[in-house]
Amino acid sequence: MAKTSLVLFLVLSSFFIALLQCDAEDQIDLARYPRTHISRPHAHRPQPQRCTYDGIFQFGDSISDTGNQIREPAGPRSPCAHNPYGQKLIGEPTGRCSNGRLMIDFVAQALGLSTPNPYLKPGVSFSNGVNFAVAGSTALNTSVLLQNGILSPVTNSSLLVQLDWFLAHYQNLCETAKNCDVYNILQRSLFMVGETGGNDYNYAFLQGKSIEDATALVPLVVNNIRDVAKKLIDLGATRLVVPGNFPIGCSPMYLTLFKNNDSTSYDDKGCLKGLNTFAMYHNQHLQNALQQLRLEYPNVAILYADYYQAAEWVLTNAPQLGFETKSILKVCCGTGGDYNFSLMSMCGMEGVLACSDPDQYINWDGVHLTEKAYQSMADWLIKSQVFECVV
Image: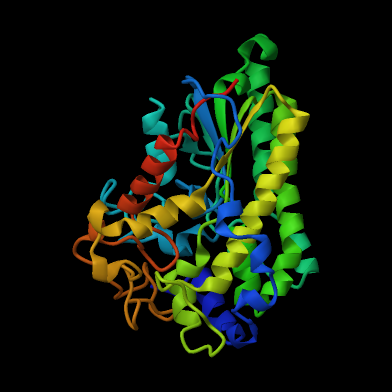
């Protein structure tokens, strides 16, 4: 099998990794962003009540893509288009970058809905909403990234492109409905705006940008997410969930790339402190932007989904959840090194096999998680009432 565009990009980018100063404590004031300052979902919010939804509109990247990227021109070369991806779901790849289901699948199930179909899949029903997420996508348009010296090598279908897809879809709904106001699907649907923005930073880091450079991107990324949420609200959306970023310092990809960096420091879980601090920095700015939106739209439920704490909870409680203790930071589908990960032999490439029991692993391919890990995260988020209704 030919190397995918993503793998080629990662391999070329690895030569520039030495330029990144990984210890963010020298560039971001940790005292300003301690963990206790990261607000939990619904902090100081009204007591939530159960809501019913007619559908879900999903935006984002590979964390929630159920089949869009593999239907783009370069899609057939995507790792997620090849075995062993999707082996637990239907025995073959669906475009999900995991061995099985994603969080959106479990959230939809919890809400009594079917998973919304990918927008680019022909001939499917969109009665339960639409999934616009694209693996490899960014919050910023590729042109804006390029202005900042960053290439987006996987797809041009950024968050704003996904919004354009939604607008086209919504216009079609209004044209086929007798009265768009009466049809009112937006008010009865859940809007998942992300997770997005993670790839903007990934591409920056992998192309040799420092954490200081990536920090300068944060206001641009957060503003784009806020602006898309605002546009959806202005169109009629009343229930939005906006997720934060993961603890990227726990990613086997970064752990492998920075293993021999003298400036690298680790936390008690073996994760990279600098990158996790950066992820918290992004998340705090995102939460601040969402609070401003709540003040502007007091009758709209704008909820923050704390993917960082959900993932951290899974890592902390891995043994109790049934994950193999010795494999907490190791990759199921990969080969080589301390984390079973190599840029030259990534999951989906010829000869790279998956572990015999993915349910014992949190990490699937070095970047994405296993179905069981996503299910555990979704359970945490659902129990924390992120997907409840407050209006």
